[in-house]
Amino acid sequence: MQLALFLIFGALAVAGALNLLFQRHPINSALSLVVVMMSLAVLYWSLGAEFLAAAQVIVYSGAIMVLFVFVIMLLNAGEEEHTNGSRAAYTVGMPGAAAIFCLLSFVFLSEGGALKTSNIGGDLGNGVDNIAAVSAMLFTKQLLPFEVTSILILVAILGAVVLARKEQ
Amino acid sequence: MVPTSYYLILAAMLFSIGIAAFLIKRNVITIFISIELMLNAVNLTFVAFAHMWHQVSGQIFVFFVMVVAAAEAAVGLAIIISIFRTRQTLNVDEIDLMKL
Image (cartoon, rainbow over all chains, first blue to last red):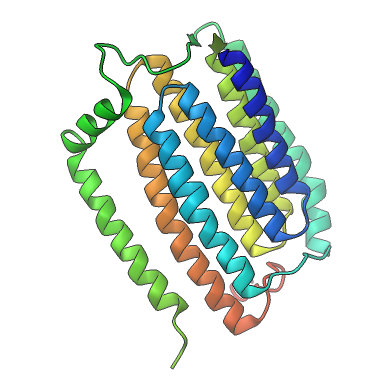
């Protein structure tokens, strides 16, 4: 069951990411990123992180991607054109990314014996469900970082307003 | 039953595609989108390890990464809008004022 979920949604995520890479129009890239994020939300759910699956759908594919699509529409971004820089990036970027992937997967596969297998659903133990565990941690041990992030959001809002404002 | 290394390899795949898109794309918005893809790939490794160790700390970390990504997206897109307003282009080859 979990293997089937992993294979279907992992393949969907990789297909979405490759589509992001090969599409020329920014709006197509943004919409394929939504596909990647939705399939990652399913994978989070299968790994027992129900709260993060919901937050992924609401925050990432809801709020952040709407912001991206809004800016793409606002700036009327067209298809990107090939330049000398992009040709150089193709010759360097593709082998570099492939080398990083090969290195990472070599490490993961050779150390695979030390990594365990995972069963579907949340099993944090003691019959505590995922959201209870996350919120207990977030509002006791991690209370200060949690409050600091709200200040970070406030600063980001002010910065966005100041930066995007029309010059007088 | 899925080995944790499968999740890590999927995350590595998404991260490498993100790196390739970051290097190849010439549109500043698409470059920003590929940064989000890399952040998502790292989040997947955090959740996989949190599940493997039966610890909730990894999920807390992903929560903070999401918050920072939201703030970063807001500020970054505001910067892109103000760059477009002054230079009338989204091509990174033409936004080179700080290059030597």
